[in-house]
Image (cartoon, one colour):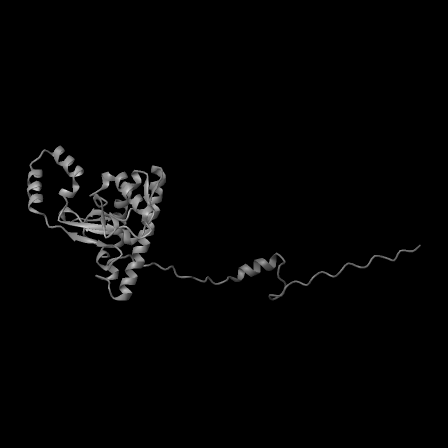
Amino acid sequence: MRLCIQASVIQSILAWLHSWLPRRLRTWFTSSFPEWFLPTQIILKRKKKGWDGEFDNEIANYETIKSLQGVLIPVCYGQTEYRGERALVLSDIGGACVAEAEGAILHEKVMRGLFEQALRPLAELGITHDDVKLDNFHLVEKEGGQKAIMVVDLERLNQLGREDAIAHMMWDVDSLVEAYRDHLICLKSDGLLIGKLKDLMEPVKVQPVVNEPVKKSMFADVRGRGMFSGKGNLPRPPPPPPPPPPTTF
């Protein structure tokens, strides 16, 4: 849920005073009292019914990879209560979900590089995303107009060794690109694709099946070894051995 915050007079004064503080003090005040320094737009992610464990996991995961907040994942300002349920207060990263038409506007080769840029920092920490699907990736625009992908929905992360995480990350990238290709084809079929399909994905190369003619020399070679006799007829079985001579007593 996207919310727009209207700052009160006191909050506006505090924000002005906050901007004049030294950097270390600003950081301390922001982390200690985040509710006073929230941006004008935030995302309120309400806990799903029966998802208490997943909600607790996501809070812990945001803390584990705090160094990536605001860079590759949203900033987590903490939690609150909304209509009787706990909810996370996250930064609004903007952009569009890759699983939507607005997020499927780049060529698959470009997307491969962006997917890897989004997942590699996690892998370097020995972490992989355990729910790799297009819905959990947002195409955003950074400063200077550069496109980037940010990762959302962090309920399920895996703690692996660095080497194992990097190997798993490469498999995840391949899986995402394949899903992206299928998504483009579906959007084209539904008339929702923004742009032309040929400009967004590589053409599918189909190798033709070539039936090579059977050479006569092959059969001649087989006949020469006694497997065939005549014109394609199987050889006759050998005659049965003669019966043993009668035994006299």
